[in-house]
Length: 471
Figure 1: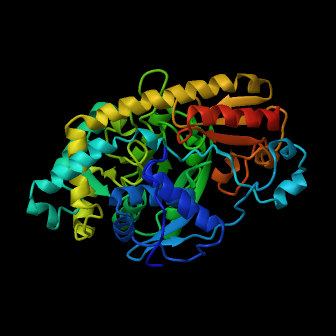
Figure 2: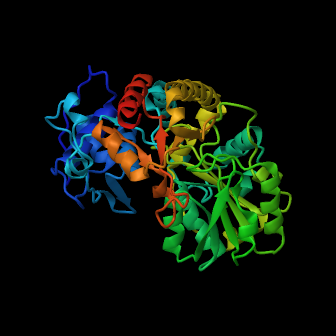
Figure 3: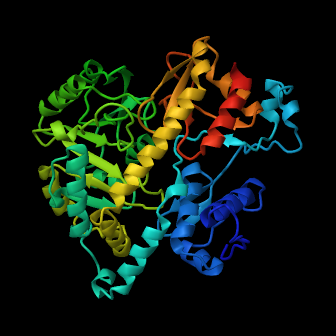
């Protein structure tokens, strides 16, 4: 498809990117855009709609994160295979509660409230600042920005990232150790080229499934290690023969567990016992902590260059800001130079420069502070609304991140909780989706409630609907 006609309403309360996102999502759900159909490029659609390209990129990135579309390198965006898109058409709210579970499985439902753990609040994105920086960067007439850049990313941006990471996360590194890439997926693929093929790796269970699928695509032999209240069980790790361990110690996804210093020391000790062992630290949404002191990174405690640190700006700024970074131990920097230095950077130098200025001029710090307050307000409000749920549920994962976990005290199954919520037009997410093997071994129903992308009113109304469903 080379064209896509979308009527944008400039006077609408909804942002332009939301209108584009909702139009394409509706077209996919109604079958007007078919599986495998190619969407217009962000540049072409932006030109046709007379909007900024970044506006279209934000819409595409949201569709990408929700699974409606997929990105194919060097080819573009395509409609994904989407099944069971539910619609609640023609049903009155008073009739929803009369629907049986059997009917719920067969009824199309259009979810009214979506407690997605992956969405963020884009209503507070500093569009005017980003637009100003974009204009300034382009008006400077710097022809160097249009030349081939450093494969690791522009030095100024890497220098700013190094300063930011040291100040906020305790990461000790130089700009030379940092590689900038378009998303964590690319950096993990680059890491495979650095480390080599067929490296046995251990991952937490449950874990971030996208990373699991990426390592699986490399042909890496993957062993999952169960967790306790402190994170990955190192005594279980010692029973298997692996060279790599992938962990999220500052805020594990999806459980929200924060790994204490003692367990971190055990992991570092394990890594130091052999010369070819490394820990991959994915510092997932570590910026958003609402209680207690900030948790330093695992890399901050690493004295022997065993931690490969990965972070991203997608959660803290916007999903379409496809800029992630990887901090390599010095030994692996040498390997990178030898094996991978010929790869070109995957992030536009113009985008790098805008982000560089965004950080350098203090906008990023102010934006983070604003978003921490925003998410803390939602977090606290949601906990307040869930107070009466405590008689039936154990609430965990609070005080950090953008989601909570509710575990049934009455051993109600996860499937039942999801289906009962569906009857009220509410989409919730099962913890089992993050388990390798697809099953929570404790066999207790646990659901994930994200709040990042919802307004406080939507959170309130959604919780009221869940109260009808579960209490």
